[in-house]
Image (cartoon, rainbow, N blue to C red; front, side, top):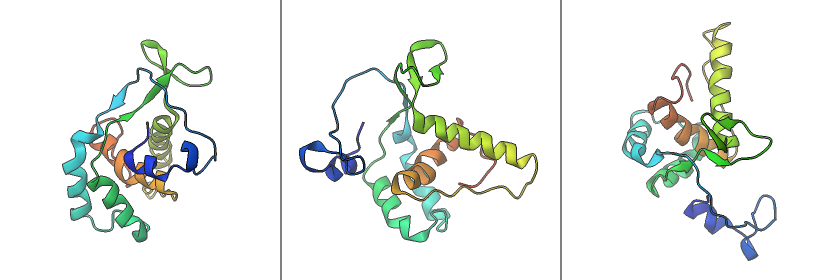
Amino acid sequence: MLSPQEEKELLENNNCPVHLKPCIPRKEDNYFFALSKYQKSLEEVLVKNPDFVQPSFRLNEVQGWIKSGLRDFSISRAFLDWGIPVPNDNKQTIYVWFDALLGYSLFFSYLQTYSSEARHLSLTTILEVRMQHCIMQELIVGGVLDHTFDV
């Protein structure tokens, strides 16, 4: 599922700007995380914590993405042979980006058993910045991830 911004970034013939291959529309049933219900709380996080977005030059991008309206996002895909199955649904596989966020949380929990100083995650590409500053934060607020580390 592409956001309106991602749709604008497509190249000629609906080609992905990263992979230079055409995006192929498809329909399938998926599970979604209700990111849209956290719109206000995420806006408040940015107001109360002006240094939350690092590096700071990404702040405008993150604010723009949030102000454009947060959309619910898919956390599963139609079953794939190589993915992690969704519990109690053998027709779905956990989407790799959602799986990565869960992995980050587990990794930081593990690091904190050795050092309470392990508290920050830093990602660099705009997709990763969106994941770090918007989606991951709301997974914490929504109770999916434990808020034992700074994002």
